Image 1 (cartoon, rainbow, N blue to C red):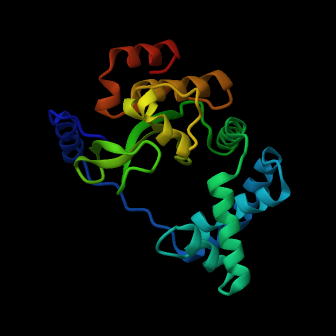
Image 2: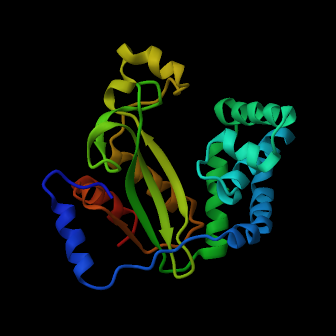
Amino acid sequence: MMPTPDGELATMAGDLTSAGPAPAVVTLTPADRADGGAELAAYSARCAPLVARREQRAWAEGYLRGLLLADVARKTVDAMALRLLGAGPPAARQVRALQQFIGAGAWDDPALLAEHQRVVAASLGEHDGVLILAGSEVPKRGVHSAGVAAQWCGATGKTDTCQAGVFLGYASRTGDPLLDRRLFLPEPWVDDAHAPRWRACRIPADVVFRTKAQLAAEMVEQVQQRGDLPATGLVCDAWLGRTQARLERVDAAGLW
């Protein structure tokens, strides 16, 4: 969660903590990961038609398998590919191919997100489900990653060089998956003076500056417009919830 400068969220968190015992820590075991292979294959098969080429479909499933099932400490492309494919020259070629897919591959992102949300609705959806909005940041070194800037970083608890995003999740009695995400681009990233930098990161030329609250509202409204996922309420941290215009858009979407 993203704390506010005046400590408002810290006070709220303290009140919640004192209200009852801390939630249990949930961890995945190697056996859990092994059991997930068949489900992952079924999920990949539903999304495969939205990835144009057969090779890309294979790389997409391999990348998901590495993220979710590979028993490696750091989820880098190199580590996942070598763990799944083994060492040696063939694996080195596979690493380069997977890097190419992640760095320059093309797929229909909106269609994939819509299909993912239909899967969530079918498997976890409940009439009184709740949408969840939250910001999250990743510390970075250097200035070349898309959207990196000196800004509030929840991971370090201070203003720091990082990438920031807004994320939309869903919660029901049977699960709490991620639904959507938006990279936050600070204003300097979308002005004409910084055009060479965002072109190098392949940021589309028609991208304009949006606040985190605007990005959050867009994700919620898209889910509502699709109409596949049942939800009656929305929760978010104090930083996103303190914007009156944001609250009005939530109300207009018919959510508590």
